Image 1 (cartoon, rainbow, N blue to C red):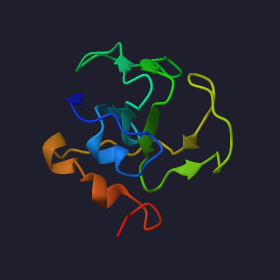
Image 2 (spheres, rainbow, N blue to C red):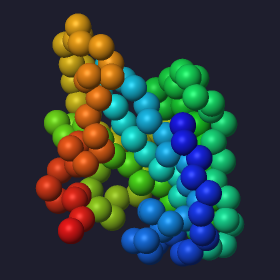
Image 3 (cartoon, rainbow, N blue to C red):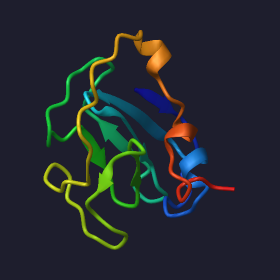
Image 4 (cartoon, rainbow, N blue to C red):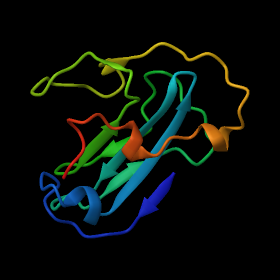
Amino acid sequence: MNYRPGKFAAAMRESASTHNEQNVITLATDSGEIIFKQIAGLIARRVVCWKKAGDRVARGERIGLVRFGSRADLWLPRDSELLVKVGDHVKGGSTVVAYWPPRAKSTQPRAQRQVSLEENLSTAEKRT
């Protein structure tokens, strides 16, 4: 969990992902890490996360609230299979966004296994 204070520009703007107030949350799973951001927007100016660092999260469990005018960005492991497409309506706690199989257990220490966010993005997601 990483809270980042910031501005409150319209969340639909590309710059909101780097400049707006946000919570950056990394979930470690058997399949890899999932990283997402709750990004505050112009109107509500607030995102809420009910979890604290180290808390467990159950499948489908809601972990917070993105208030009106805010947004969430999601990064998945490169080898995941997306089950939604642009324009689909997704619902927190019930829509399955992607699938990827569990990885074999590694004997490497966790610090050596971590991959940077940039390495985990597909070519289509990288911005130039």
